Image 1 (tube, rainbow, N blue to C red):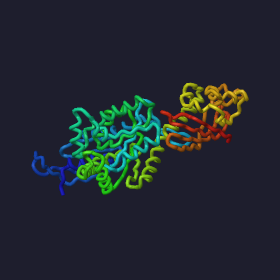
Image 2 (image 1 turned 90 degrees about the vertical axis):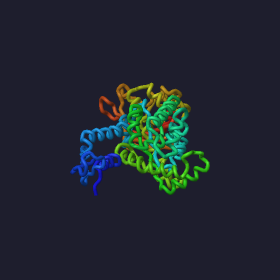
Image 3 (image 1 turned 135 degrees about the horizontal axis):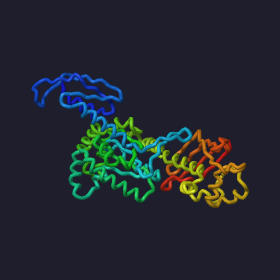
Image 4 (image 1 turned 135 degrees about the vertical axis):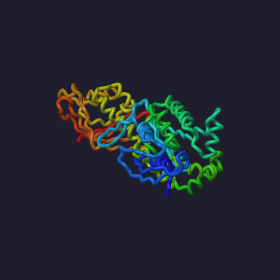
Length: 420
């Protein structure tokens, strides 16, 4: 069987962009200038991750290398602001405070993306949900009719339009909140979307992960027909649903596969019971929410070491020192113990006193960390050694537990120390 070499090359590039191929042994058959030229059979061999060379009678190697470079740039730029860290044996990532933190949420039509996103924003504090489909359906102005024609036909709306609406929605949300995680529902749907994200959003956002809700087509069709009875959506019919599902399989799933090696892609079985799907979704979200909690805890310990009162006060809730609820089991004078009514005195108690130790920098060595997320509350426990930076002397060894609440940002509301 003979196939056009351009078809083979393009197919490999579009559907297996995370693989590397070398196509060779290409010669022309048929008329010299005919658009129907066929080639001899092409043999494909997988190469190393560092190599890619596609040769055929209509496309140069330079063009192919440029395409591959663009594909790698597309993928890497969606996470370029993330920095990997470790807190007591738990890995987590951080990003600059002025960059949007994003989770892509994907699945076929009727897979339950919207339902689970609603659950997430109700369970967690600083989580925002933007459905690209809803933004498109609710768009107004001269673009409305054009967008409607794409949706009814089951086609993907041009990325510039989708991201223009999304970017504005994220800016509006950021203006009224202190950061958070943005759930971007129904994006990216193809490689053009990924490229558009890089161009438009790459310099202001980082993708923390991808949630993919997997569901059989038979179940998706049943849900679409049921939803269409009350939703009023023009695309909630069996014909549009099948077109959208075909688009998801042929254009979106290759994107998901290509992202596997770049970001944390989590597949969730969407055809389970609502409780089971929610349990899996919540576990996936907890793993991402922990990044913010551990980052806050590390910043707090750094503020203590640096004696940075301003940073410490920003990371602590004022209610933490009201009344007698704290169990701070460190040696302190009776005068200090009676002065816990203000945060500044509490800040002073964070430092080990006695034998001149309070004069030098005290660093923390953390190990055996554990974290539990309960929606808007998190508990972090760890072994902590307080060490004099100059002498290397261990001043104290303790098991420390801190409770954090999300109040438009994670703040410490309670802590307990027990000597080791």
